[in-house]
Length: 275
Image 1 (cartoon, rainbow, N blue to C red):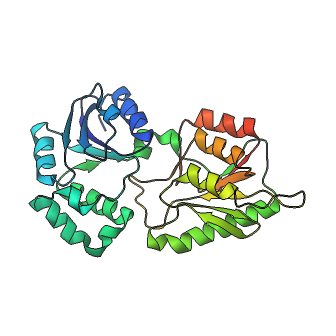
Image 2 (cartoon, one colour; image 1 turned 90 degrees about the vertical axis):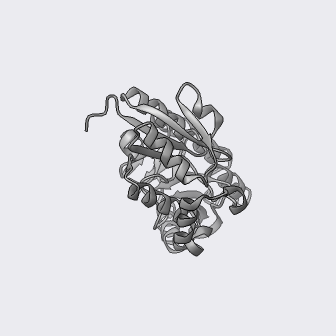
Image 3 (cartoon, rainbow, N blue to C red; image 1 turned 180 degrees about the horizontal axis):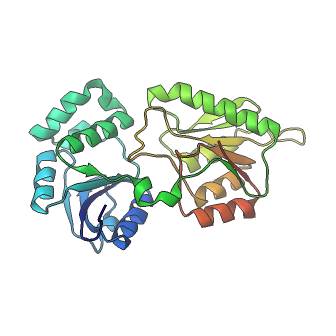
């Protein structure tokens, strides 16, 4: 696909990933236009690029803007949370989307997936994060000098099965587990905060192995926009909370700044197992 000179709309949520994607798109020759939504987009993302601020419920206005600027590609990047209905102020097109969602409105994954389908039905081509930054996806195997022992591998396997089971309820991208005992399920606080919270609950002692963290995508999670993310701060959190390491699902978890992340794994003496 010829990229140079093409225009793309970027919708960014929380986190540093939208900024990495914006820089990568510009480097690759895309003309980036930021669709900045109130209470969703970080203000800094609009710096040095054309942009417009609007309400998330103004879908017809969004479509008109894209057509006016001859934009046919769109990327949704970062963490998005379900907004309050009272803050949407939906137009007719947005009300059509809400009607389609029905009770699925109460799940973040269903909202994102339906939005993506809606944009594609309107003629837009979705550009995936992993296509823009392919080096962020992980392969199977072990990273670092520390190898997980048998109990850790059993915990990772057990944790993965638990996450697969509960993901149908649109919860749980990660969990902390110690000797088959689940310390906590990742909720709205995010990975690093969950690690910190669960570190306090872990048993300590010379005969007790430290806990491990398991990170993976939910069963019906959109692979196009909403892949789980870990980064160097995750390594810091693991080390500070006394975790021995982490298992992450290969091909389904994005690693921010891989060189710094893998160096941190080495320096902090935690294991990283990609299953």
